[in-house]
Length: 171
Image (cartoon, rainbow, N blue to C red; front, side, top):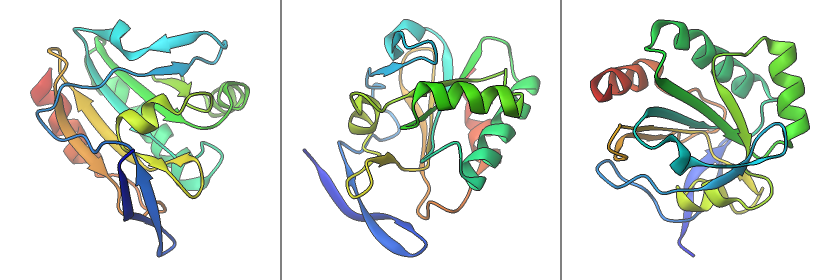
């Protein structure tokens, strides 16, 4: 398995990312995660749709909470056929509870806790913590990666404007 030591930091401390680093222009790797109702979900089931895939360390942390609420709000201004997925290692029960408490209804949360399939396929699995790094990927209708942002410091937010620009150009 590929390892990228020091690829991201948390409060300045270097962390290692596991998995293959995806690049703009790559075919979006398939992955299997767990939905909030405990059913398996394969990314390939969204073939032909534009998707924002945001990975976060944990919805129960301030920056992840803020980011997920922001993407939920931004969804109102996007075409209804654009899907927004937020993935974390949080258990499906915790994700469902968090979404209900936060009023998040325009995006879907999925848990990578069981297989770490997404984290490994997209190169954002943190070796030391078994959490996902903060990252955003935009996938176009043809299944190609159009935008990649792995946020260097886990306590920082992604570049929302750049993500939205990439989505609009991919739609």
